[in-house]
Structure formats: structure tokens, C-alpha cells
Image (cartoon, rainbow, N blue to C red):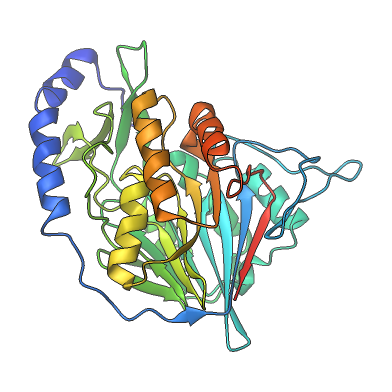
Length: 347
């Protein structure tokens, strides 16, 4: 990894953060707004949360969840990371894809085995964005299954996925080096890297959002998150971060986010806009509200309530305070997520 940025270098790039972020909002909210595209309906969507920050073997189930139950000597691994395996079913035909890979390859591969997931059956692989807690286990996971994965299988990413990133943590004076995923490491495993900027069907019925339009005024990326562009660090606007969405027959959209640095409300509204489907059945994933001000959490929850999803399951980077707020304000819709949970949404 490259050396950490010192405080002076960080301050140089952050002095322009306000102007850059304002300009970024204008660009992303305008020029990157997407036209509606024809979206296939699915009969069923299954989402395995391969790993997440939290595991509890005793959590009760509801009508859309199945929890992994501990048996002696075998337990789900939890970590500061996120990984999903997703399946869609259309007219009896099932297609699968990986979406994010977590942090610890040993723990993630343990969970894949315990959950009975066959990586070789994936028709595609995908990554939401270039942060280590989403990509770190990818290379080892793919390498372990390389002999079974068809050469040329697509690996979908958004813009700037392979860029170097940094973070200035609270109370620190040095920006931590977050590293980067190398494109050649994926290609050397026989996969075909495909960069997406517009809504794209990555397996039948599963769509990358394309670059997410920013329409709320309060969902902002913290200026402490940096990206290296043209050999210079600058505030990261996560212009290429992707979420997945599905159009469940008769019930509306299922929206699955990685971290939602663009804002979970922006993400859901973008999926509604590009799909032309207003009704939202479920919203799952990281909402990136950890350490957010109470006002931002309240506004986010209020806007999700207006959208009226039937299920809400915050994961990973949502943060304890925001998770509690969702539970209090949307008790009927809320599900506490645990690593090893399988969600099934059926028409």
C-alpha cells in the first residue's frame, strides 16, 4: 500500500472540498440522471447476507427471513465487512450473482460453506464500490473457486472502483490508506471486468443502478473520505458506487445497497426513476449513517417512511443509532439483520 497522507496534504485537498462537492452534486444530479429503461419482472428474489457486522443465532425469523442456526463447532463469522449472494427466478429459471465480498477471506469462505452457496453457479460477480471492507476477500474467494468458474464470467463494477482511497478517521491527523482492488488481479483469474455507468442488467432481473443521481440536499459524503485522481487526493463523491434493484412481480422494487454513500434515499429514488416503478417492496443494505448527526438520521428515516416499503433491513455501515431509529419509527417494516440471514421475496 502507498504511504499515508500527512495532515498538510489532507488539508490541501480538503480546502476545496466544499466547492468540489457542490460541483459534484450538480453534475451527478443533472448530467448523470438516467432515462427510464425497460425492467424485467422477477418471480422471486433471494438474498443471502454472507457476512455483516453482526451475528446472533437466537434472532427470531419473520416471513421473509431464514437465519443460520449455530451447531456445535460451526458458527457464522461476522466482521466489519459486507457480502451478498443473490438469486433471481423468472419463469422457473434461476440466475445467481455475488455482490460484494467482505473483508476476511477465511471468514467469508466459512460462511459460504455453512450457507450451502456454490460460487461456481454464479452467472456474474459484482462489486458496489472500491472500499476494502467490500472487496478484500474477493481475490482469494475467486481463486479458491477458479477451476469451477467459467472463464469470461463478467465482473461488474462502477466507475472508479479500482482507484486508491484514503480516510481521515476521527481524532487522527493522518489519512489512513484504504488500499485498492487491482483490476488485473480480477482479470488474471479469468473474469471479464465490465464497468457500468448506466442502469445495466447483470443477470436476468438483477440491475445495477448506474451512477446514482443526487436529489436530496442532506445526503452528503463526508469530506474525510478521499480518492486519488490524477495522482492527487481529493474528496470522494462515490460517483460510480452501485446498488442492485429488482422488480418483483406485483409487489414493486427490492433495492439492495452496499454502503449507499450516495444516500439510501437517493439510491431508492434513483431506482424508482430509472425503472419507472414507484412501488417499493423492500430496502436492504448499508445506509451509511454511522456517526451521522441525529437530524440526518431523522430526515432519512422520515423519507424512507414516505416511500412506504414493506420491509426495511439496515446492514453494515448504517450505525447503531440509525438502526434503533428505524426500529422505533418503522417497527412493522423493520428487520434486524444478522450475518447468515437469507431473505426471500416472492410474487
